[in-house]
Every structure is written in C-alpha cells, then in structure tokens.
Amino acid sequence: MTSGETAGPALVTFGHGTASRDQIVELLQSAGIRLVVDIRTAPGSRRVPHVARTELERWLPEAGIAYRWEKRLGGFRRPAPDSPDVVWRNASFRGYAGYTRTEPFRIALEEVLAAAARRPTAVMCAESVWWRCHRRIVADVVMVGYGWRVVHLGHDGRLTEHVPTEGVRRRPDGLLVYDAGTLDAEPADAEVRATPDAFATPDAFASPDVFASPRSAGDPAPRW
Image (cartoon, rainbow, N blue to C red; front, side, top):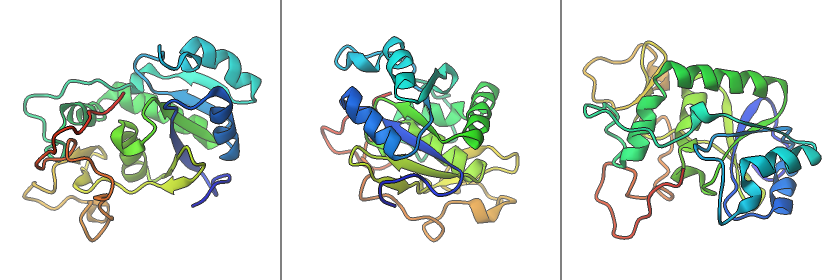
C-alpha cells in the first residue's frame, strides 16, 4: 500500500524517530490520522525535544490531530522466568509478549481500538522501524487477537500491511502466545495459528537479536 489514507477500519502504527515536527505532521496527515496514542513508557526525548509529551500535547492539536498518552501500553516489561514466548530471544520482546496477556494491557488496548473505530488512529513510539519496536507485538495482538487490519506508517509515507510474527498463535482463551507451535494439542482456532504457510516470515527485516536464533555481533536492542 502506498501513501494516502487507509481503506477501511485499521490501526496505524508510527515511530517518530528523529523526524522534525513538520515531517511528523505531514506524515500523519497524509495517512488521514486524527488521533495519536503515544505508547512510549517515558514520553520524552533529549535528542528530539519536540516529541516530549508536553510538546506533543500542544502542537499536534494545532495541526488538527488529537493526542493522548497511554502508559499502560508502554514497553520495558520483565519476562517471567518460565515465559512460554520462546520465539523471542530478546528479553524485552519476550517480556512484552507476556504482558499482553494481562488485564491492564487488554483494557488499555480495547480503549484504543474503541477510539480507532471512531476516527483514524495511530499508536506511536520512538523507534522508526516497526519490527524493532514493541509496536510489532501490539500489531500482532490487534490483528491475530482482534481481527483488525494493522498498517505501519513509514517515514517515506508508505503504509505497509502488518504481517504477524511467525510462531504466534491465539490460544483458546483469545490471548496470544509466541511458542512456535510447541503445544501438543492443536489450538481450537487453527486458522489463526501462525505457520510458514499461513503468514509470510519477515526474514528480510528480522534482526537476529529478537528471534531465538544465533545473533550477529552489533545487533542493536529495541528502542522503547
């Protein structure tokens, strides 16, 4: 999908990176966004001061885009020692995957989806590349768990359809787990179980640092 407003209900994800205020406004407006939900744990940046929460609360509405901070969807969650989310090598991703199965996450996400059903909404974090950010896991939950479309807004203005992470599946209780299909029994909703045949694997993008595979030296950690 190229630049332009999304067709039909969808949740958009966006990472501000080092983009200027004008660039951020242009990108969000090009995608038709009317609400930005900030899912950074700490909504501030010394390097990019115009994306601090207090600044965004001022200049995004000036551009016709509402803003709210949703701390409950922030990253930096500790993984449980017995985490079943073995697809993720990186502890930050594994911790966030486990957090998605908690009530605070579910309530916060459903509030965001309710808002997104009323007006075009983007969830925003700092990392400009979606697959290096916990937006990737949020997108998996929204798409596989709730049946929504998810698109990622890049700094080139392109909207990319989300592809669920290989190895994710929806459990019978509706929650997601990244266990690479290690359970003995087939899940009740087999059609949403992620396999190489069901979803394309984003190997062209995936850093070895985040998957349960040999890592390459110098792979940076996710920025949340």
